[in-house]
Amino acid sequence: MKAIVWREYGPPDGLQLEEVEKPTPKDNEVLIRIYATTVTAGDCEMRGLKSPLFLSLPMRIYNGLRRPKRITILGQELAGGIEAVGKDVKLFRKGDRVFGPTGMSFGSYAEYKCLPEEGALATKPANMTYEEEAAVPVGGLEALFFLRRGDIQSGQRLLINGAGGSIGTMAIQLGKYFGAEVTGVDSTAKLDMLRSIGADQVIDYTQEDFTKSGETHDVILDVVGKGSLSGCIGSLKKEGIYVVAGPGLPLLQKLWTSMTSGKKVIAGTSSSRTEDLVFLKELIEAGKMKSVIDRRYPLDQIPEAHRYVDKGHKKGNVVITVEHNNKT
Image 1 (cartoon, rainbow, N blue to C red):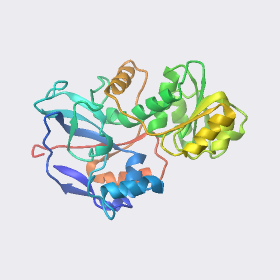
Image 2: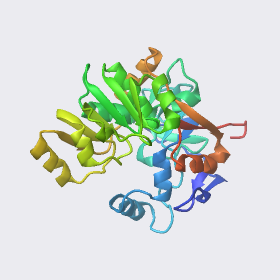
Image 3: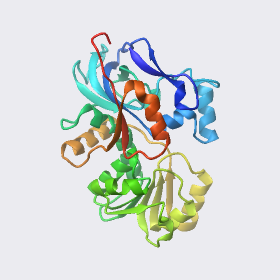
């Protein structure tokens, strides 16, 4: 099968189109013929190991100090059809159309991928194309996880910093579904798109610092993790919650903020569950959510897609379409 193989840490030039062995499902796995995947900011951070040292060093130790060895195919989400099932699989059958995240195994920059049936995998929404549904799992599951951590409630004011990416576009729509008044913060070129998916207010961070506006919010979801901690805390209402979508804040800072202000600071990594993916699917089929697609690339142009995502300007998602022929 064809796959984009990750050969070197650093720039996208280390991603190469190669022929690799087609995987065989284990007893509890399904083999998925991939029709669409995405390039996320997380894929690009992984490729270049751009995370802070406390995250990138363990990853190098795990995956290879000089070059990738354990994980050699990136890609965090997929949409496709089940081509084969292991003998113990009960939930899916050959021919089912499915979508889901790949988790820490990555591997969706390829024509095929095996996933365990007990992972976060669900049959596709009836009203979406493969490209549209491939853009749902990572952003949707992370947005849902962190909004729940923030205990978002109807009538509350929610601000999303970095609202124009994969997580942020889903968080806007989920925030509206949960009954919140939503403010989206991002760059000038993304503001009209944020309004189109339901943002009540938008703020152009290139022109205005939301932490200095005097406005306060019940929950701030910081997708980019670059906001001033003191500024964000000051922009919360009494007993407000500041949620960072990632493991970015030291424990002592979180404890000190909670002890001295009564406001909560939450950071960490999300978890993926099938029931949450099914919840998102149901919202999509009810017309409450949709994926936002900026650009589409074929599989062999994934390095170019990475270069585009590296610029930090993507609106929603960058989707990869995977073409098959009778020999693959």
